[in-house]
Amino acid sequence: MMKTRIAKLPLAAALVLGGLGLSACATQDYVNHRIAEVNDHLSAVEAKANQADQKADAAMSAAQAAQASATQANQRVDQLSGQVNTIQQQVQELQQAPPKAPRG
Image 1 (cartoon, rainbow, N blue to C red):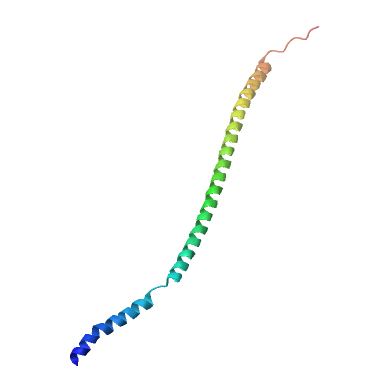
Image 2: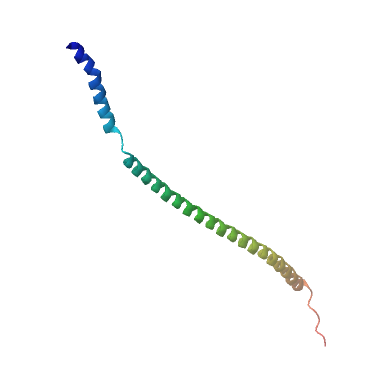
């Protein structure tokens, strides 16, 4: 009788462990549902990242256009500064020149 109890012990242990193991396993539907949720979240994050990337590209284009305009404006200021310097020099020369005698 003792041999029968000892022989049934591993069988009972196997059944208990098997039952616990089966109750701990997730169903395939549950796993598929969770994976779909994660994939949806990843898609949303990717879409936001793409939007941010497009906005960054647009901002870079605007900054480059502004830089080009500023460079062009600076070149024009440099040209005008040269002209202003020439005019100032001519005014100083005229102011320092002796007055001309009236014709008469």
